[in-house]
Image (cartoon, rainbow, N blue to C red; front, side, top):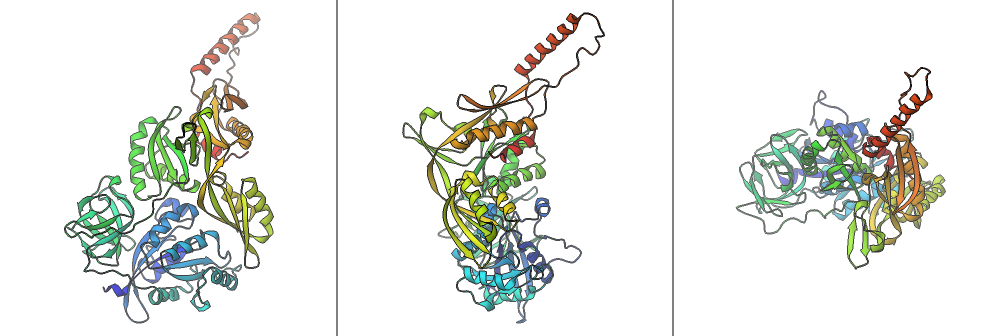
Length: 600
């Protein structure tokens, strides 16, 4: 098919504005799937996505569509996530497209991630088609939403904004016709040397690594020898195909098309998202720009509960990273938990998703340590080091100053709770910048605040205060001098490094007390006494005790001399003392998860 009859587009929106449902309706109308095969969230192929009702991974699908002009078209659709933690997935998808459907909920209106995704699409010079979705809801206010869209998209005309209900199938044909008429065909030439952008990948047990590719120039077929330009490695193409949405093998991928390559690559580390694929014999002169390197926002340790599972965890993490380039890891060891990995994430939801995927898809039982952001520590000898793990924090006498990451946070909230949201932001050490009013009933608050204050529960609290109508987006700003300390947790006098954290000095005592009390509730009673302490350096700032289980050792003593009972009690006491010295305290996984959310 001619390149002029190809359209590549993605669907972008804030979380829960109907992207996946719209993708479902487009699949049905273009008859990409039969009614028998259809199920809700068709492109969300992970159980985790369907259970949580969110898109985690971008999904590509090739559709055939006969337009009103009588011509046949190939539409390459990429559905994207909406949560702030998965922004990298959106940026990868956008780079493989010429246009985007900007979906906005008619009852919720423009939200923080709507604006963030829009700016990302505009930066890549994509044609934006605004779609106001969920017009069938009784709470829908499409005209008000239209004004908000015109406010953020300066050059859009009222007649360019489409109305739809993905759930009811209203307006889908108009959306597809707009894709044909308003989004340009792909540029590039088939006669040029092959340049293909790797925008995603996954792992198949039989085929090895599957490379998701957008052909910018040239073409590629089964049997070709290809070169990964950045990695410098060559492979023979074993299979070329497209997603319909299932994998379908074809003879050749042409310029402008989106599909996949299988080259029997067994080592996940050999593929880099954003790399350029070219032919070994007729290589392109320069690689494509690719993607900017993404720096994780949050770091945490992941360890197997059973140390024998370390090799299985290592293999699982390598394969998982194929489908999530924003996830980073390196080996580390802990005195308490043994060998594991220090992992970098884009946020706390991202961390939870990675943990659940590792446990479900690879049948692992894992422990996750307390998350931390990256601090820049200047030592007294002038050395500057990045500290993403409390165990790496130098002794206090060797530290000259510490800097922590600050973000600029955009909070969209209903007008009636602005005061409460501002109080919350100030409690989190936020510095107020400005307020912008969006329409008659909502405002955008802009704050500068430490990243460490918002990674755990800030978003949840905003949702709670605003009854679900608030939204948050943030981007890294800079590093600023701070006064933080390392908070240690001791169990029976021994440091439990997996629970150590770096906290703001003024909040350290309150955080230590809250953590100690929470652990007292969650650690089950052992056969010996467990002393839980919070310490700053050598100073104990909070303590609690888990009382031991007691066995009635004198149950069989009926009457007689009291000295017999005393002897048994003394023997029991000595036994418990010995147990306390050598016994291992069992920490349930719930204790780790609950500890993450403990706030002073």
